[in-house]
Structures are given as structure tokens and as C-alpha cells.
Image (cartoon, rainbow, N blue to C red; front, side, top):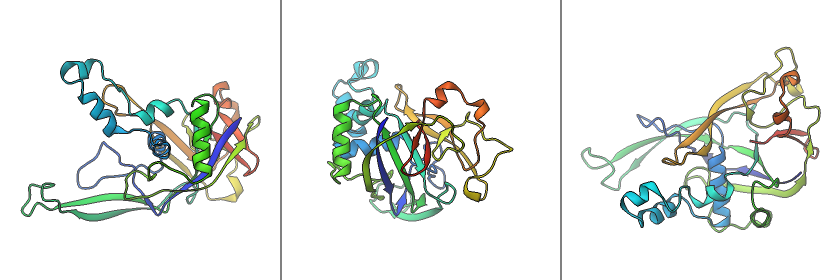
Length: 266
């Protein structure tokens, strides 16, 4: 299978969790599918939430609610069926997080005296991933080829960033690669579905310290309000339990021989 592979990194990143807004805003541990789709959409110049809102508001009233002109932002419509694999390069898949404190002084952000709002955000520090976008029919061939051209030649219609425009993204080492089906996988080097279990009696890859990271991450948007659809994803350096692998999981697993990686596409 052909895929577009590139390195994605930055000094900091912030992928906001929408379920907590008291005291501080917290981040997901990794870039998730929706944020990645938004980044790819920015590269191609696709519309986002603002353009979706403006078009739907033009309908007005009940028509807007019952039959929105754009149920999803354009970037999500284009990439929603794309298969991607996300390989973290932190310490055993983990990036340091720190709370950053700054002031919003526009004057109308707070009801407190002076109108100054103290903002606390949790940022990822020096995150880096290898991203694979599969050319498996999930994205129109014309869109995939244009994306491959833009990414390989360092072109972008809008500046890509890692969650917010405070966090510019660096895209490097882009190329098209051929992946092979992973017929006898031992380890998985990317984020994967939680039901792909570890072998509790197995080895840890490359004699590393054992690690297992599980988090609910956004994998899509719902149609009601474009809220996140969450699924538990896992990153681990332990051997997987091949006896428990399902046929549909094997169909999502590929081998990148160039980098000696086994990938799981989500």
C-alpha cells in the first residue's frame, strides 16, 4: 500500500480537552485524528469551523438546525475517511507537559476588575511524531496527490499549527513510501486500538523500560454539534498477543521496512 510519510514536530503543542475548563485547560497527550485532519486541511487551504458557521448561519432559524448546509467543516468532510498512523517519538511515547500562565488583556475577557483574565494552559514540550496517510481510497486520489505534492515540496495554503496558532508545526522528511502487510507482527510502533492486547509474558522492545499509555482520543466528529467522538487508544513497547488478533486488525497493520516499524492505521 502506498502512503505519505512525514515527520511532524514543534517546540510546543496544545490539543485542548473540551471537558475541563476550571482552573486550567488541559491537553491530549498526542495529536489526534481530528487535529491531524485540520492540519492537513490547512496545508490544502480547506475551510474550517469559521467557514462552516458562516455558511450555516446564512440559512437562519429552524432551517439551519434541521438541514445545515455544512454538517461538518470542509477539512473534515474531505479527510473523514482517511486512514492514518501516528508514531510518537517521545520517551516511550510520552512528551513532557507543563502549565503555562499568561494574561488575556483585551478588556472584555473577564468580569474581574481591570478585565484581565489569567489563562492557564497545559502544553506538550517538543513533541514529535511520524505521520502516515494511507492511499487506500479513504481520500480521493486527486486530493491525496495534491497533499503529497504540497507536503513533499514544503508548500501550504495556510500555516499549519499544533492545536493553536501559538504552536507552529514543522513538517519534514516527507516522502511517498510503499508499505507491506504485517503478516507476523510482534510489536506495534504506533497508536493502536485498545483491544489489541499486550502479551503479559512477552518481551519489551529493544530492552527498554516497560511502558503502556492509554488515553481516550478524538477519532471523529458527531453530526449534532461537531463534538468529539472518543475512543481509547494505546501506545506500548510490549509484545502484542498475536493469538487474540482479529482479522480486521491485521488488515489495519502494515510494515514500513525502511524504518523497521509495524504500523496500525486508525
